[in-house]
Image (cartoon, rainbow, N blue to C red; front, side):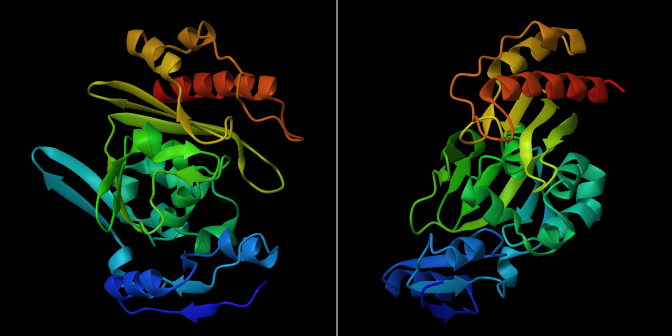
Length: 269
């Protein structure tokens, strides 16, 4: 690990000032990705700005406005806090399922929801929920729609000085998350979140490609009929899918359909 200056600001405005003044700064949330990356000398920030003391970036609340309800989750909220939160258990249990599937208990006790999505790891669980639940990502200056957020491998629509403040999750009629778990790391070899809203289905996929994406062909099929059999007739090409020692691109395409079918069965129970 290279030398760096450490800062622990007392407010969001102070954090932003420190970021603007530093040569090559990085924000630190739970540190589940950044710290190992720094230990391997794959990242060498001049300044590390620790956000863990900022209460304004934490917490979970339900917001109702203009006939619409969302569950807003602060970016520094830890995964196990999402799992245990009564509001989420009552109104958005699928998000508790997704958060509970992340890594192991130690990771869930430290990792934050904002850090997870900002990293755009191709095998992270939460990006599937961001897309499947049509979430909005709030930064200090703007709101980014889910469909515009994930761009590529470890790349999002966040600008260099953007800081995720909170995430607004829309409430589906019903939703479920199915995952094929890597037995060693707990990462998603493939994960599929299927959610039904008043205007149709959304299917968020993680693990299969360089970043999370929506399976539009599956959405179209489910909008015609929410039956497991319709998944069998959907063509899922493996072009551009990840291929590594854990699974080939072809196998990931197969897993996507298997998990989508399980999701539909679960929805209809």
